[in-house]
Length: 298
Image (cartoon, rainbow, N blue to C red; front, side, top):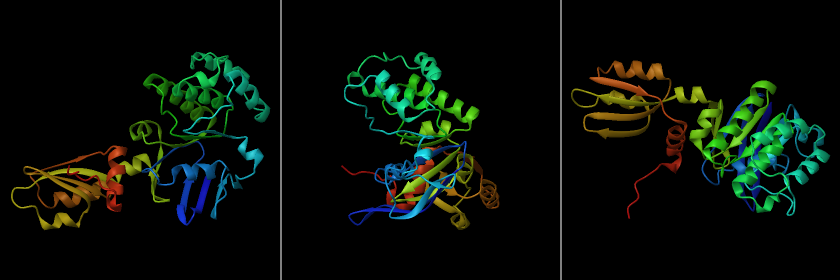
């Protein structure tokens, strides 16, 4: 269990984290999304024990992470910007990892050669960014961590390799109850793998729910009325409103059943409720925080 309470971190008077609160259940896949500069990477650096908060706390199973060697031995971290020793091969890095992580699984390393088609004797600096990312996953998965922390994890990987990587990770979630904490801008991919999502904005997590609950609490309505649109429609929590001929398209926050009951009382000619993707939820939730997508006049 990861618990984050009132976490604050400032740099030269700017609060990169401004009171973050979050809870991540063991064995879950938690997706952290947000615009550039929201504080996602700074939060991850606190979660991995790289940074010390100015205020608040961040604990895993009730223990603080910073300078906690025992706890860190259960965490694998794959950042967006991969770093390996300049002259190292995968075999060199494996030896280094084994010296730090006694639980390094040599047998699994051998089996995963079928998943990652990389020459382990080739210097990593000569590999492409995508192949370096593959190497990081190959080594990280062999640590058999309790928690896998990923920052833009599959950026640079081709679609087939992305599927392979997630397949291995989700297998560990199912079989070993591993927790995955992932930050990514690829919302379509997160939608396929995450069971919980947190939306971060200006150093705070503004919304945190299970993915299914989040999708059930924001609805896209297509409505048509015989005459004028009833004024009572405005009693809904409308995030966005558009018209296409006689069809009124609304993005509404709230419980689906209650929304439909309210609309049906207005005697529409037709009404249809459509689910939103995680990307659409992200856009419309931030739209109320001066982050709406607007037409650009050139």
